[in-house]
Each structure stands twice: as C-alpha cells, then as structure tokens.
Length: 287
Image (cartoon, rainbow, N blue to C red; front, side, top):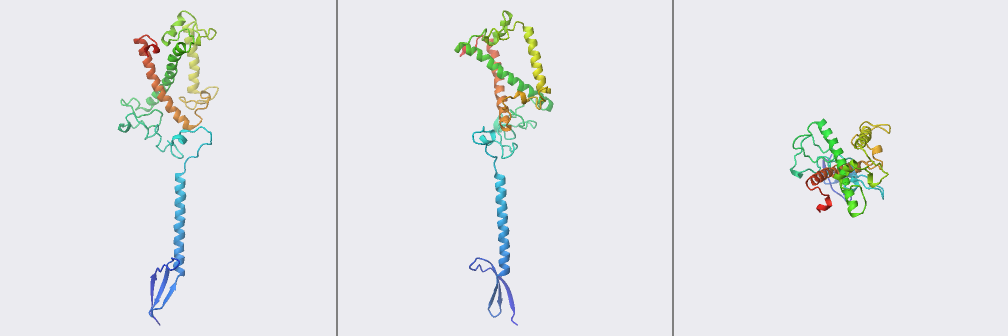
C-alpha cells in the first residue's frame, strides 16, 4: 500500500479559495477542498460581522443632537456646538466646565473649588473669599442681585437725561442725582405724569417700597400662594412670564449674559457716582 503524505497547500485556484491537498508517493494528487472552503467561509462571515458591528458603533458614537425644526429658535448647542451630542458635561462649553474661558487665559490656575459649574466663573479668586461653600453661595446671590439692580440703575441714570435732552420729553428733574430732592418741595410724579403716584412723603414712599419688596423677596426665596420657588436665584415661573428659561441651553447662555452685563453695570454705576461727586454735571455735558 502506497505511503501517503499529508500536505497543506493554499492553492488559490480560480475562485481564490484555499484547498487541502494530499500528495501520494507516485506523484498523483488528490485535492480535498470541502473542509478548507468551509473553514474559510466561517472566517469570512466572522470578519463581515465584526466589520458591521464596528460601523454601527461608530455611527452611534458620532451621532449628533437632532437639528431644531425649521424656523425654530436655535439654541446654544445647535448654533455653536459648545456642548457634546447628548450632554452638557463634554467639557466643550467655553463658559462652563474645565475648558471654559479664564481671566488670564492659559496662564490661569484656578483654585479647586472653582470648577466652572456656575455662570461667570473665570477662575479668579486670588484672596480665597469663596473657599467656604456657604460663603461662596452667599456671595453668588449677592453678586447676581446687585448686578440686576445695577443694570436697572444704569439705564435709569442715562435714559431720562437722554430723553429730555435729545427727544424733548419733559421730566420734573431728569438728572438722577437731583431727582430725589424734588420730593422735599413738591410731589414727585413718576414719568412726569401728575396723576401717576404723586409721592409727597419720603417716609411713606420708603414704607411702601419696604412692604412691596419684602413680599416679592419673600416669595422669591420661600415661595408663596402662586407656587413654590425651586431656585431662589432663578425662580422662574411667574418671574419668567416670557419663558426665556424654558430651554436649558438658552437658559445657560442667558445666565452668562446676565452676570457679564451685570458686572459691567456695577462698574458703570461706580463711574456715575464718581462723576456726580467730582463734576456735579450730567453725562452728556462731559462728552
């Protein structure tokens, strides 16, 4: 009986498939393709399956947030791509998180407690005034409330003088640092209208303001008959009748705009105070 020698040979063939060859001692060949073709088929199917899975995973990772409907107001995410596909924690927001803008740019080394969680955090606290969490929370409330009053005050300082000087609107006293003294000599009419309020007493005016502001502040902090206050600093609800904060992305952007403009307004009010004390003149006379 002839001795048989088993030899593996990947011949390629016309179909490019491997085959198994048996070579006899007399030189004749017996080619057995079945088992090799079956193994090759299994390898090919496994490779195709792995490739398909990899493509699906790549598409899932690269999936972006859905675009807003045509004509809808675009949010921060859709306009600038600040945030990642599905979360605001991707670190790509220039106003929040570790990669936010800082007061000295790349040279800033913010303390550990300034993480970029809140609007307006530029990593600046050289004196460590906000190292204590309770102190930080209190300062944050104080800053935002003063910023809001400063924005209203800056507008109130400029607008009456502008309207009377350039638009011909008449006021009892358009100059902001002189308007309060009018009540000492005559009723103080709001917006120049004789039938609007007509305040005659500083004490009565102060008492009314304390009562009204006390009620508003009490509701802002503790809630009231119109509903509970979820966030005392950004209460929303009846304090947001136009629903500016209804979209989370836009709300985050508006917080940054508010604190930045408020800080500028506080500096502006300081400038108005110094101007009034030093010159005693209105702003348009100094232009």
